[in-house]
Length: 348
Image (cartoon, rainbow, N blue to C red; front, side):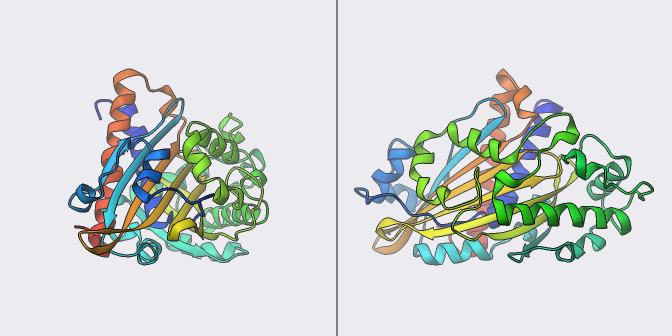
């Protein structure tokens, strides 16, 4: 990036996308049967025309999605030589922790009813500058931390500036309480980030991101209505997880939820939401739709992926800085997808 401010925002976007790409794989049903996969994809996406033969012989095709205010989005289309169910399985199994350059230090699944003990890996967090920053910021009660006022009052009075002992215990309790709230009441049940001096709520961020993408929201309406994304708890029980990652060289703790459901015509829709972050960004969402197609005489899957990010620093970008941030996000998404396809044998 040309400027530090722009670099900061795009790194935040990058980390979200990495974390998401590792786990944000969820299935959703289409509301009705469409003409054909290529036409259906074109009907709600930024891709006006989809050539399966060309996609089958090329790398993924990422494009800028609707963006505005503090939101950025990227849409990607590609073809993999396997069935949708196999693609979904590969998505579920892949982890960004395999690639140090993606800076996802820890990824761990959570049970349906999380407790503080499920975050015990915090006691053995990597000893690197990013994690040290998070520990020090916690000990100082920094307003950079995205906490509620009530959570901030629980910071130990004599916390050491290391990610162990009382600091790790504090974050274990915060993450467990938020994961429990999401599991029982969706994003509507989450406390705000008002310790920062703002009154930001993850549920409102999800709805604002989706409101910029009316066709996408309509395409995934059936799935979204059954989740806790931007609303109360849905009918589908999510797969929960947490991560520790680096955003602009600062340690960030995140909570995510993964939903899946089959769609019409043998396709699969997926949705993965990052509904809490201790810093760096407010919320992140990745949607997928996987269609069964035949390319070159082989059973394959047409993949559409949509990534959306909400970040306070993005809202301050204008002109060339914003264009640069969007371009960097496109490149970062492409890299994540390339690594996933290479690792899982989905590259052409």
